[in-house]
Length: 117
Length: 112
Image (cartoon, rainbow over all chains, first blue to last red; front, side):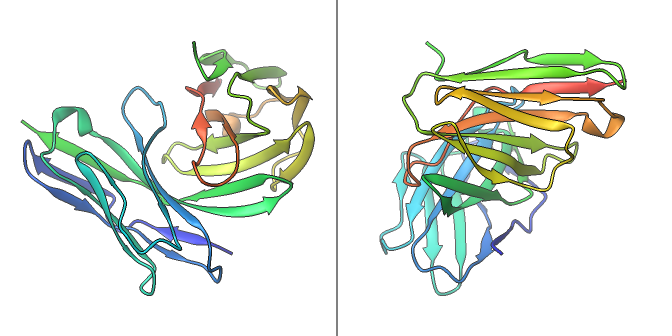
């Protein structure tokens, strides 16, 4: 079974600073996808960034980037120039094929990030 | 135009009642899902449907029954509601594994 571990239940960062959220996972598969989702107080689940396991290049989306270490099964999220709107729960997720076009996302327990003015 | 819409957004009901949550997606995705987020924010899959066919059926009580009349709709019916059913229920859809899920805004169910 796939597991996703986020070891930091809560973190805080000063506005405009950089913060890194950790995620490790366990799988025996070779091809898979990894995601970071953001859940602000509004409750909406928002896709932040995704990484394809067979690509060595780390994904980047504006201020968000990942450090993907496949051998170590590590997938950390770096947020640069933190903004107040980045305050949210962040979930790391791992995608596995479940049959007939269905892909199961397994989530970590989340990291609550607070951006301090 | 909302991509994945759930109704209602909030639902407060008494123990023992039966309730339904509706979900519709206009993205043309083939697969839809129900996830439960508990009070500690943990997200766990309940069901998935691909083009009206049940694919994933995790260990949930038989009181929960999903229904998919077509690939754009996936409803969740819950019988004999219990206090422990209080949670946020998310509907989502996907097309392949590359892009993850598109989530609805969630339904906060409170059983009193």
